[in-house]
Length: 381
Image (cartoon, rainbow, N blue to C red; front, side, top):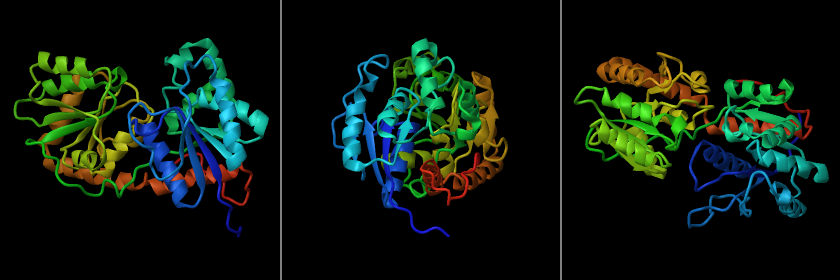
């Protein structure tokens, strides 16, 4: 049996962080907190916050000057990394984006010898997105992740995308996102006066909230309201769509909801809907599971890995308002079926408890460090 391991010094290099909200930010925050709690020495290096406030999250967070372009000057971050490395002696850099963070880490490794692992978000590597549409950036992204010491896929869908880019399959590890079960264990009721269906996410086209509103408009009178939490450029057009469909009084856009208010919002809902047109691995579905909510989700990307149709939720085709409406009607109209799916959701959430997920990251870190006393990291869950 091996002895105690020394604490790891890990730079979590990211293009996003709190207080911005999303799945990538949640993973970054939970991982930094877990590493700190276990006695390791993480530091988050991220762009400046856009909102006023302080960066008191329980772990060191260093802000670097915002990059003016993803095409030029990305390596200007390397002197900052070298200065931090002299003080902290990094064992590893964990890139929370395939580009430009992995591109920077590859150059940093060349001068420091510090290994790096990469966890793509999804949009930074998916075909058709901005990085893949720009030949120069795509070449940089490919070189950086192909040369990484390990690449982390959130699920089997992203594993396929990562291997298609050219990464050696032996270097790919599937580590699903996690959820803090204690955070969603209980909450005061959300004060909305009527029963409601919930959806959460950035208000951008690929999230499919326009499809959800159209589906909601097809529900009969007296159905639960629709509450949509999140912010983004589509907010105005979604409000106009709800008004045009004459459901403006039943569709409520709440803006960004955080903390205990978010937990209450989940726990008081009838069910959860994820209408995305594409979705690598949705943290909001994990949060719904942890809240004991049955989920209606489109059968795209990582949704198909998380939802077992008829066990913890229902899968429907993407871009189909009628399919969403039919699934919601089925749940609302059959309390016994809804209760069974809710029970399945709670059982599923246990598999994604954040402590176990973070520990898999640690095992991977030690493997990259060359600690062969550990068990081989599983390639899937």
